[in-house]
Length: 168
Image (cartoon, rainbow, N blue to C red):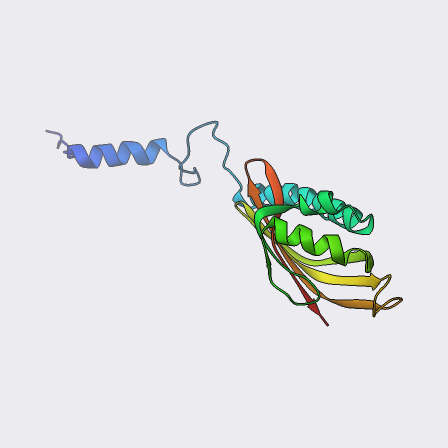
């Protein structure tokens, strides 16, 4: 008489699964492409950086062209600005009033981005600025320092939420 091999049902299922799935197979649905989070983040940061660069170019052009209304519109209604003089300005109206008097004394401004980060609907730019003075007490001189700008996305628009000039 031949002996009969007895295998329990759970052991049989485990054996069947181990035969069906090779040791190198990954646990994913056939045809499913794994998402590379790093690539998605890099694409997002690149898109935001393009938009912020455009906004920064508009900001510099409006400042240099004494375009007070265009410059003021680049700030959110509830924005905060600490200009080179150090006074705290809150809201687009205070910012507009500042630019209506200060731009007459200021010449062109140059801003240099040193560091950039974006997360969700907010982006931060850390850099340097160089501001020339066309008239007033500092006529013919320049001032330089650190510039920190926070941009915020609302709807589909990026604008300046806060900006701080720190003369160096």
